[in-house]
Amino acid sequence: VQLQASGGGLVQPGGSLRLSCTASGSISSIRYMGWYRQAPGKQREMVASIISSGRTNYADSVKGRFAISKDNAKNTLSLQMNSLKPEDTGVYYCNALVDGFPSWGQGTLVTVSS
Image (cartoon, rainbow, N blue to C red; front, side, top):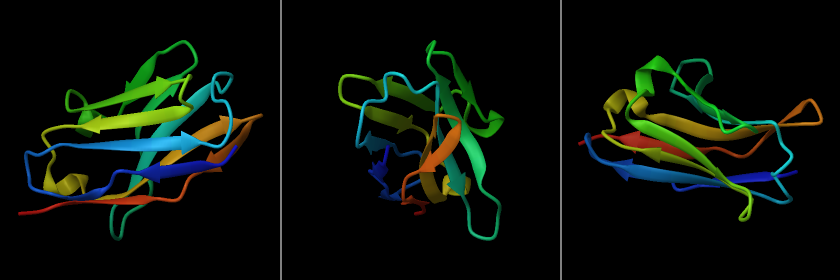
């Protein structure tokens, strides 16, 4: 399955953005999907993940501000980001484990700045 992320942009601190990741095929049987980000000069880190049961997991830095969701009917993974901070700046990637192998979408840039 191929993944395509969208929804990034420039937002002021305290603002909101919603990222979407559209898959080329069905995601209903994918057991793990997630959002990762890579800030300038830093390693890629997990931001939020969701498994097939619907259980979610978040990095401590985004708990209470971000929400991951999955729409199997639309083959879409989303990330609602609220109360954005400058440290949330980075390239955001969606990820899926397909038959045990990671599949990555191209990144979408999120810049939080006044």
